[in-house]
Amino acid sequence: MFRKKNILKKHPAVRSYDPAAVRPVIRSSICTGEKSAGFQDLKTGRFIEVSLIRGQNDLDAFKAAYGIEDDIPTVY
Image 1 (cartoon, rainbow, N blue to C red):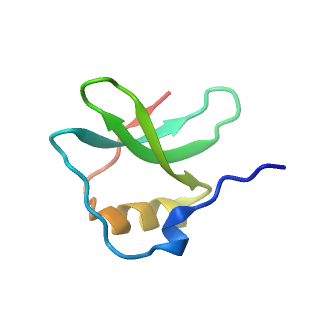
Image 2 (image 1 turned 90 degrees about the vertical axis):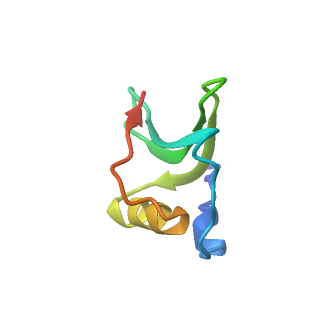
């Protein structure tokens, strides 16, 4: 009914983030298995959602948009 918009499709340019303040993570729901990619604040632990992950293509787009080459940890 209410879909989350994938902002990476609207703005495909490479973005930057501050690795000293946030780290890239994938948040996964324990119940439904829904996954979303974003950043976790290192001081507060707050999750900032950037994109809904429906498959490997969405994950690859997230990594390419932010220049992430390493594996991204999953938090629940």
